[in-house]
Every structure is written in structure tokens, then in C-alpha cells.
Image 1 (cartoon, rainbow, N blue to C red):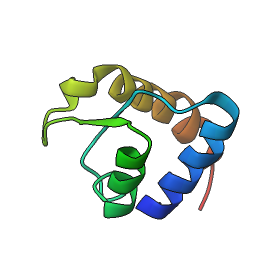
Image 2: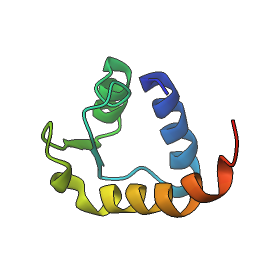
Image 3: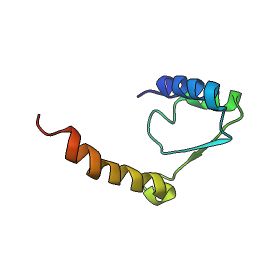
Image 4: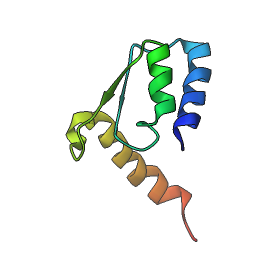
Length: 81
């Protein structure tokens, strides 16, 4: 996913639900793009980046991702190559 794709998704979500005051995100390339930074600035959204190498900054989503991977992806979706 690219910063442009993230921005397009946020625009669609914003039309239905409104724009958030802030977004917590990691330092992945899709979140450090200039496109997303401009969108956030234009819409008065604060981007809260977790510190590199500190998954505990976003412990709730890290826990969810691990559980989702174990319970769904590894178990049900990829039974064979």
C-alpha cells in the first residue's frame, strides 16, 4: 500500500464517518509519505507516530495483529501454497 492509497482510503472513510482528530501509526513507508502528510495538514489531523523499534507504543493494535495472524490467517486462509 502506498501513501496515495492510504490517503484515498481516508478520504472515502471521511465522507461517511468524518475526519478524525488524530491517527496513530507506525513508521512504515505508507505513513511517512508526503501525500499523507499534506492530507493530514489540510484536514487538521495529527499524525502520532510510534517510536521506531517500540511496538509497545501501539500495544493494542500489535496485540490484535498477532492474534488475528494466529487465529485467522495462519489457521484458515493459507492451507496450501
